Amino acid sequence: MRIVELVLDADEVGIEAISVVENPAIEEDFVVLKSQEVVLAEVSNEKRILLGALLIPNKPIYRRNGEDEYYIYFSKDTVKKASELYLMKGNQNNSTLEHQYAINGLTLVESWIVEDKEKDKSALYNMNVPVGTWMGAVKVNNDEVWNDYVKTGKVKGFSIEGYFADKMQKEKESDADELLSKIKRILNG
Image (tube, rainbow, N blue to C red):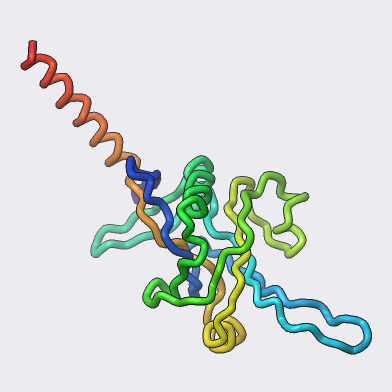
């Protein structure tokens, strides 16, 4: 079965939204963070924060397009660049449910790349993710999503939505552009 590396294209569109899903393609569930009980018998409101892996480098992700079956993956460099572009483009409020419905009230409030597995915040929550993983914490200010999907366990992780190029296709296009450029130089003498 073929394995395809996805990269950012020349337009650098990248990731446009984060979807909360039941079955994340990266096969990593998020952790639901709630505040601790406070002394004096007062209980503060739930934090309503989901913490988890958004994109894992070099993780084969199965895809099927009709009869065509293959795996895709993202390099560490692509993961880092995609995470930066996501925030630079101001997309931290773009969310969907199961890649089907745009939803309001979810915001990426923390974003980081794992640099050290033992000292990373993800280790505090017993998440064993590789170096280079894009981690995120999403604040849920949408009662319907929180009560009907998060608390019931209908969603278990994150999945990204975006536009990437197939590295082999991109290289072929680059080769074609180079060939076209050579032909123009020959014709123009």
